[in-house]
Every structure is written in C-alpha cells, then in structure tokens.
Amino acid sequence: MKTTFSIKKNICGLAEFFLLLYVAENAVGSSGHLVSFGSVSLRMLLFATCFLLTIYFVFVQRRDVLKDQRIVLIVLFSIWLFFCTLLGINFKNQTNFIWSDLSSFLGLALFPGFIVILESQRNIKKLIEVVFWSALVLSVITIGIHLCIPIGGEEVICSINTFLNSKSLGGLALLNSGMHRVYMRSQIFIQVAIIYGVWLIYNRNGKSRISILICEGIMLFALLLTYTRGFWLGFLVSSILLLLLEFKNWNKLLAIAGIALCVMGVFVGISTWVYNSPCVLTEAVSRISPDLLVNHEVNNNVENAGTIGNEESTDLITDEATGNTNKENLPEVSVNQSAEEMTMTDIANLSALEIRSKTLEGLKERISDHPIIGNGLGSNLTEIREDGRTEYMYLDILLKTGIIGLILFLLVFFRSPIMLLIKCLKEKNEISKEDKLCAEVLVSSYIGVAVTSIFNPFLNNPMGITLLMITSTGLILFKRSATK
Image 1 (spheres, rainbow, N blue to C red):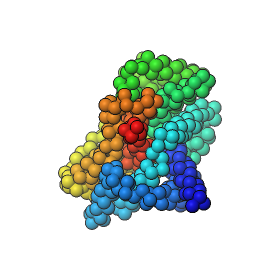
Image 2: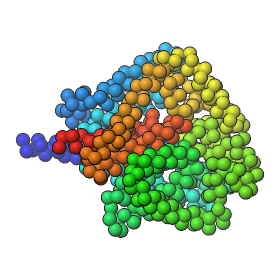
Image 3: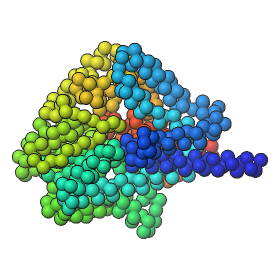
Image 4: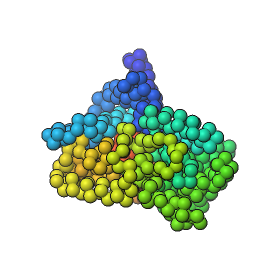
C-alpha cells in the first residue's frame, strides 16, 4: 500500500511539474514552435505528457469532475465544435483551415487534469510565479533586441527577424520613426504578469519586494516596446479594475505604479541614449494620436501606411505588408501574429481603414448566411486575406460556430472569471487579504486579455486557454473558506 501511494504521489508530482512547464512554454513560446523536433514541437510533447500524466487522476475523481459545471460546459462546447467540423466539411471549407480552427481549442482537453492537479492555494501561487518569471524573461529578451538593433545594424535586424519568423515567435517591423517594433505573440503574458506582480509585491518583504518592483518596471518598458494598442488597452482595463477592487489600498497601488514607472523611465533614458533620439516615446505618442506630436507631419501617413500592432488586424496587416516601404533599406519583415505564418501580397497596398471596412463587411455578409449554426470550422475570408483570418475573435467565432457556438464559447471562457469577480465583490470579507488579492489579480488580468482579444485572437488558442485554466483555479480560494 505504501509503495502504491508513493508511486501515485510521484506521478502526481510529475504531472504538476509538467503542467507548470507547459504554462511556462506558453508564456514564452508564442505559437509553440520555439523548440521543435522535425514536425513535432515541444508544446505538443508537453501537451501529450500532461494529458497522459493527469488522465489517471481525472478518472479517479471522475464523479467530482463530471459534476463540475466548468467541465460540463467544455464537453458541450466540444460536441458543438465537432458538429461545426462536420459542417465545415459539408460546406467544403479548406481542410487546413478546419484543422487549424479545431486544434486551437485542443488545450481545453487539459482543463480537467489542470483543475484536479493544480487547483489549490499552494499551486495557484506557483502558477503566478511561473507566469511572472517567464514573462520577465520575455521582457528582457524584448528589451535586449530593442537595444541591440541600432548597434548591430541591418545584418542583426535581418538575423533576429529571420529567427523570430522561423520559430513563429513574431518579428520586427520598421516604424515611421526609423525604430523597429519588437513583437512576439507571447507578449500578451507581459500585461498579465505585471498585474500578477502586484500580488507578489504584497507578499514580499525587504530586498525581495524591491526586486519585484524593478521587474515590474522592466516589464512595463517591454510592454511599451510592443507598440500594440490592444496590449496597452487590455493592461489599462486590468489596472483600473484592480484599482477599483482594491480601492481601500489605492495609495499602495499608486505607489507601486509610481516606482515601476520610475524604473521604466530609466530604460527610456537608456533607449534615448542608444538611439540618440527619444523615438521610443514619440513613437508611443504617435500610436495614440500623431497630432500630439510637434512634428506630427512625419507621421501623417499613419492611416495609409498602417501601424504596427497586434491589437487590430487591419493595422497589423497593412503595417506588415507596407510599413515604411518608402525606405530603401527596409528588411523584409513578418510579424506572425497568428498561429500560422501569414502571406499578404495581395493586400500590401490597402490602407488599414480599407482592410477594416472590407473585413467587417465580409464578416457581416457571411455571418448572415447561417447566423444560428455558423458556416462551419474552416470558414474564412480568403478573398480579403490569403490566410483567411479575420483577427476579430468574437466575430470570427460567430462566423464559424454561429450564435449557439458563440454562447457556448462565452460560457466556457467567461463563466468562471465572472463568478470569481462576483465572489471578489460579495465574499471579500470571508477570505484572507492575501487570498482576496490573489483572486483579484487573477480576474483583473484575465478580463484585460479578453479586452485585447476584441481586436486579435488570444483566448481561442493555447495561450488564452492556459490563462483561463489559471484564472479558474482562483475559485478554490473561496471554496476553502466555505468549508472552514
């Protein structure tokens, strides 16, 4: 009996380790091809390993698992996805598009095992730590690339961009100021990690707290360097929501923000020195409103040339295709903002406004064909973009799975976070301050990602599903209090 118990304990420990490793890989690996062995990626291997290691524990607790409404909703959504797959085949949608849409949701298969193994107060803290430090690594890499570009010149730019593209991580794009935007899909975790960092600061003392504050400033600067308004907007929404939830401690939150901004200011100064120009700030201002710049005439082609960003597909498409094409030495760039590499030759000269208008018109027309059941997985606007993607996640799901699918999607991806938010408001006095803040940072950061996903798909892929699983574990904090 002792031997059997020991084996089970070891397997459970392995499952926990690989699930945490899977989270870390999602936080730095973007589309999952950072490390590959032929056609098999590390993420695939981690996914399979996690599934196999957790399936026994899910089976042992199958009664509790099947009673969990989160799992029931996932099962219903999976059944509907299967129906939409058959629908896509019936409508003769492209097979590769069908598989791409279906595989983006495969991460939900880990949800039962994730909850069974990691849904505990101790493991929630581990998850927060893993995301935070992984995002910090990504931030350091982002800043390192930003500072190396003016030193290394075009050869370094091409080498870095080729590597990022080949690994489906992201890419570089030349901005109007002459500076390059450093974009990686996993940078979505940076806006999450900064919010998580607030909880870490509250639970640190002395030098450890100072180190976390410095890390917050580093990640703020890295978030700036993404020049992705969707990230900025999502982070702003998360910050405001956390401030409202923790309004009694508004002074502490503002102090944290002030110190982090000071650290960020140091890096802005370093960037200004390296580039011999405050372009890191002027470019940020032009992303918000070029008219705020004194010499805004240099940016008056923003609407026609597009702006580099993953928050609006149309902006991203135009930027990636055209950028500053008037510059003779512009290296070829590709941002890789979706799970598959994009080709945009047919739309290179269209403005962001034109693409946005055509995309929304096309979505409206196609959705109206089958509004209830959708047009099936694999349904895409190939007449607008060669890869067929729309980037408007919620409309894209409505296009493919109809109203029924969209409702199921919203229930799967928002029921747990909304329940957590309600508990944070109604049951805040029934748990410790530490657990309360933990739940608040989980739900605040997730809602920020949901806002970012209005402009670009993040929830409907392994990264978003990973964040959903992490956020859902926060419910255990209130269940614990209910059993006391």
